[in-house]
Image 1 (cartoon, rainbow, N blue to C red):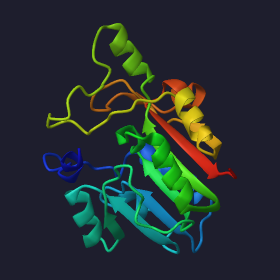
Image 2 (cartoon, rainbow, N blue to C red):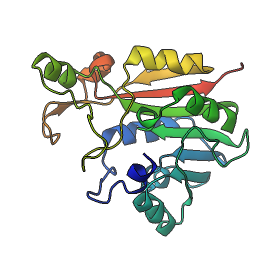
Image 3 (tube, rainbow, N blue to C red):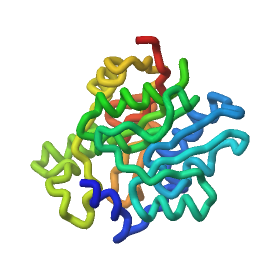
Length: 225
């Protein structure tokens, strides 16, 4: 698995600059009005999200892929190349005010250990902004009804594999987060895609029915154990 993530993005480059989910996560962080705070982005890819945050903060990134790591270095981002495999992140406890984990938890075997590590790294009352694909999104439900694979990976050896091994709904993700000593401040979605290339989509429907949206986005706060 480590080699899969190390060489991820070799065959195709992703552009997340105009990704609506990323924009919503950035807005959620900006609404916290962070100033002179330490912010860590786990799985920071090419640094696009970090580069969009207020510059009067201390920004750190963790990235497994060679492409993402090298791109972040070129942008001058304080990035560490690291593959989470139930190990401790290379930072001291209570180091960060905000931690971002966008589209990461679906790659993790031991999700409790992953959240425990985030809990360890956060300062008291620190914030976690987390997102993951919604297995119960409307298009996936329709595909399943039609007997089609609802975008669930069946092998890690294909070029289009991104290594997903966990799948979440709003309910089971909320339960997992709360069981690991985080309070959910807000949980919401981004959009619904009705076309493989995103040419037909709705941002309004998930505001009314978030549980059928494409992504699950959580703003959480560290609580006392």
